[in-house]
Length: 264
Image 1 (tube, rainbow, N blue to C red):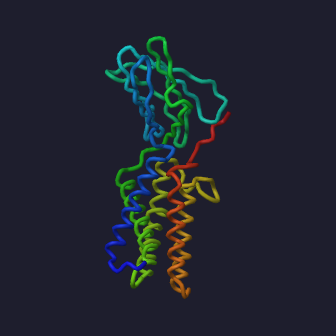
Image 2 (cartoon, rainbow, N blue to C red):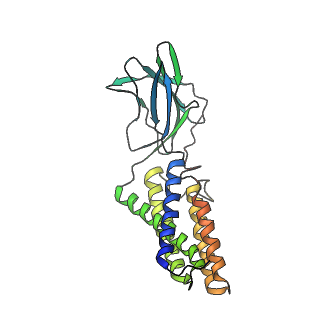
Image 3 (spheres, rainbow, N blue to C red):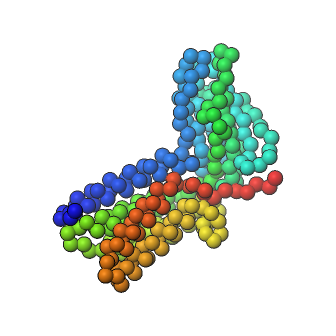
């Protein structure tokens, strides 16, 4: 198949990139846990937070009809702490409870239990894990997100150039390398420093998959640049780099992310 109109490849690249970004957003371990349950004949939809930025406690909010009460049990993640219990307070149509603030990358496990009419239900089943982080300046975060989206877009578009009638790989490869360098290797560590106090927590210093997959994608595109310059089949190198980038960025965002190791 040969595509003669570059705009068609750009449209396809944008759709693939947007779908990948949405998938990452919805499947990441810090995305709120959503669900519904039935208690005393009433359906309750809930949204349990799994990330908290800035200072102050993390407030858990659950919509609950009158007559429904609740409590929250919590403890520090991966510790032998005993569970602490907090009664939820009613604020209008919601029940709320505060989880105590933790240092950056600190995590708590918590469970919300609602009661009504002699029935009890634990929302979400298993305990939910919430991670705390520092505030990231909006300007830094916005530029980082836009630059990384643009890098994914040019990466996908470069891979699709394999099916172009007159492929021109080098400009797309250079744009992808530049955007990955700026968004992933410059702004990424800045965001990480604001959020968790460390510039880099990937290999060889840690196992943060966000850092590691950024480094893997960057190395793949350096290899593609070599292939464009040296190989008689540059399209294969570029397509391989695009596929590698798509695979690593399909891993949910923040998987195996920064985590504070509590003293037992």
